Amino acid sequence: MSEQDGFPSKRPRLDRDQTLITNNNSEPENRLTSEVVVAGCSNSLEVCQQSRSLPRNCAVETEAPIGHPVPTLSNQGDAAKSPTNQRPRTELGMAEGDAIPHVDHQKSTVKNTNSTSPSLSRDDTEETNEHTPTQSSTANEMTDSSKAANQKSELPANETAASPVAEVVPVDRSVAMKFLQIEANLCETLRDLVFRDPVTHLYNPLDYARETHKDYVMKYCCSHKDVLFLGMNPGPFGMAQNGVPFGDTTFVKNFLKISGKVNPPALQHPKRPITGLDCTHSEVSGTRFWGLFSTLCETPENFFRRCFVHNYCPLVFMTKTGKNVTPPSLHVTQREPLLSACDTALVEVIRLLQVKTVVGVGRFAQERAQYALKTAGLDIPVLFIMHPSPINPQANKGWAAQMMVEFEKLGIMRYLVPQPTG
Image (cartoon, rainbow, N blue to C red; front, side):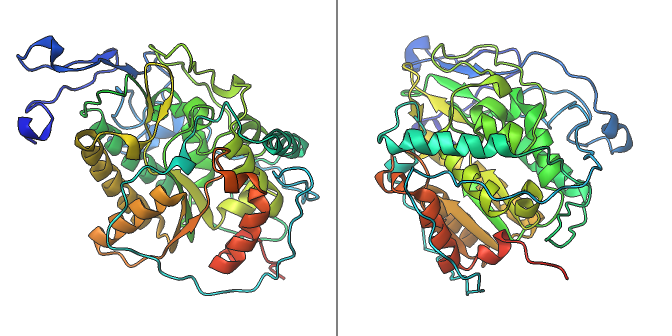
């Protein structure tokens, strides 16, 4: 890319201990309108025991800087062998007084909604500045969802991902390892990019929260998936804290049973500290998202036997005031290289998991998936569901109940509600 395209001809590389992205060209320092603070991880971790039996290019074998293959994580891939008990249903993550409509779990045809090109307009319903809910019902929804997560007893990820009412899905850990490698390659590409005004701070939870993120992948991404739920990028109180998409802390710990250490970034925004699994701030999108699936599917195993949740972009962008900046809001000269790299990684993930249907959580995710798949020549349906963000007025009118109806219309309810195996 040339200087005329808005990027230096020789872009800087980011090493683990480097905290500022600067221009390495011999141009005046005032070329950049602002410096971008990059949060990395400087703490080393113990070498994963499992990696000793893996090839040299395994994603967990050696420690590396941000963007390198995911390194040296604790061996949390082996699931507990205790049986999973069927649990009574709990209240959905909804506002008080909302009713869940009756649904008839019949199969329906999934429609292909591919379009010719994605819209790059800003989708305000997907903003993740969730510290100021817009309606009083949001507080009730968060409380109900948190109670639902806390009521879940120990539900360890069984080695065969079995449940009393769902078919057995064999575990293939090589799928999870390849998934982590795709993410590592993406981070390697993204670390060369330069982000300028209005972005001043940049977080990559795949680096500093690699331990909890790997636990999530190794537990729940060890098989092919029929449905991929695709989010946009990490929220400040969700995946940014713990490496799990839509990762409200309560559900990450109590429903998904994710564990691991999160090493706070070396240089953080004072208004966006990373506290990992100790984060006490609820993410409304996460309480709604996992609150619905914890009740609808009853156990994580029932959900992940056919589905997976992934974010299109792994980075968190912030302004000097700590405000979240979404990928479509970036300047075109910064946005296009980012989207190109994320498109490539998304196609690789879909091919690896042999995804049959992509569900974009929000319009941006849907349109990027449509564009990436069409460019790659893959004819895979890409559907849309409303983003659960509290700044989306429609989502504050009983998001979970609306999704129950939508899942039935889209024909994906059969992937979510386990059927008896006889």
